[in-house]
Image (cartoon, rainbow, N blue to C red; front, side, top):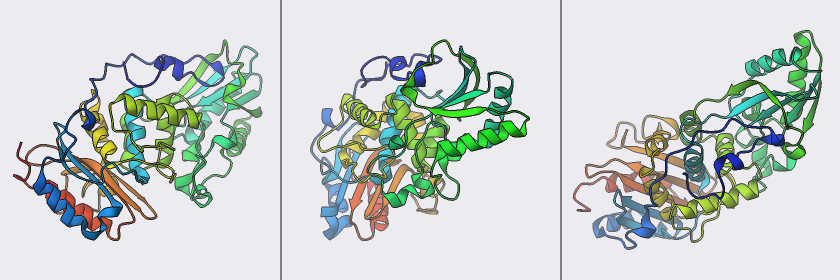
Length: 406
């Protein structure tokens, strides 16, 4: 079974209010951990090491760079053990955990339940694409199915954002609050300030438009009272590939945060962070200096090393779902956050990766196809002057044949 979190997945993914949940199918066993800690610890390709050192020049102190091949040889490394702020490279951790723990067929669900007392309850798992059309279906079903009382199960406001998110970011669409019931990811042109209030208002309006009325109230997930509930309707998100692609190709913060919570089986973020660290450690990855604070990388409290990210990529390449993981990433010159980079060059279509950018931080990690097989790279800069140019040079040098003979 998937590794790294105590207890069965069904116990960790218990839905809000004690409502019974459809059990997920058992997942295939993951292979033994494969990564840099169990393999080579010293640089084995002096030629590539020298070229990368030349590429960073006098800015070496602000870079962490690791390059390994498919067998785990450490081909080149500059400050690979030094913790850095990763920006959106943090999403590589969240998506790996979610894919491993939940499987490639998983979908997020929004459900309508009828309670034994006749009231209705709506529960959610943070579907980033929940929309007004789906809300209309819930309203229509609610009209003839309950006693006019609807409970919306939602997290309290203090859990809507990771604590370290800047207040200015929380007003932007990319920093919208993370809630279980989230129409259009709680963002329009800007973040929706109070998503549960908006949902209450829109659902009430829709029920009224359809000729009915309802008393709609909020309740906390741990309020209980869900025993004996009957599932009336379920709206499901896009599949896991679509969710992973939203996080890794499009760098969608809301989706990445939801995947961390669902993947670790808890919307209690401190507990989710603890379980994420446990999962990483269970994979045999280098953990010195690593700190998981959120799922998206918007929090500057995150710390990773380039060795951790390179080893994670190598680990996932050995995973039963490794292809789905790599396929969720942006593609140089073609797709996602890499679509405008290296188009028309020898790198186009040859690098699949995850970018990361916040003020003062530029990171990129992924899989580079070379004539001698895949290379797993991570480059994280905290303060580089022209990081994009340096990254392009390192990718090109890492593709050069003959530099690192087997």
